[in-house]
Image (cartoon, rainbow, N blue to C red; front, side, top):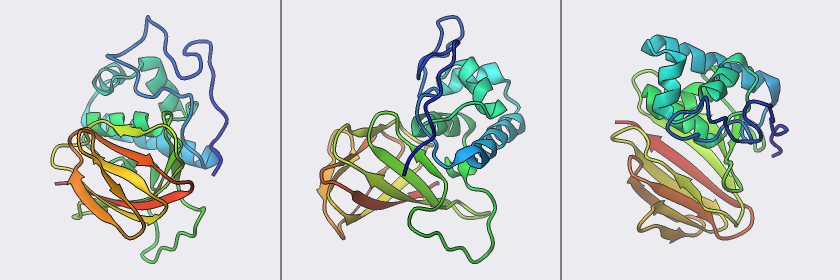
Amino acid sequence: MASMSDLTTPETGPGGSDASDHGSGDNGGTSTGTGGGAELIGQIAASIRRERERSGLSMAELARRAGIAKSTLSQLESGAGNPSVETLWALGVALNVPFSRFVDPPRPAVKVIRAGEGPVTHSERADYAATVLSSCPPNARRDIYRIEAQPGETRASDPHMPGTVEHVMIGAGRALVGPTEAPVELGPGDYVSYPGDTPHVFRALAPATLAVIVMEHI
């Protein structure tokens, strides 16, 4: 799946940020990220702004908590940015909402997502794409993602919200998955669960690796 073109601005450059407007560390910027076009970018922009306002945080405070530049956040909320997986996760942790809240609009009761469809976000650090298949509905505490990854750089994840548990099953290929200090190698049909509120990794070991991740939010 192809992502949108990289965004480069005089203020931030490709995936960077200027020294005068930076949080504790830019967590993804706008260099690579969301596939799916203007409609999805608009959905993400409105969702970030809605959740920030609901939390009562200023743009500067949310940027500080998420470790991104305020200019990056401003771009995202205006629909001018193209966020990476890492940036959206950082914002979700800072706002205490699941990642899927940003990318999955309300859907009918019966939902079919064909292969190649659905809102996709891409990692800026690895050949790794996550498609939201089902976001957490009211009174439930789980999200479901389809993962497509290629061998190369490891997709390293910072801790998610406290109490998060990840469940991973490999559909095709092979991958190294789990806590950063002790990941396990999985093949087709293999399953692992591990704490998602500690550093963890996903590294494809074979071409066209496919997986399903279920995230539980306690």
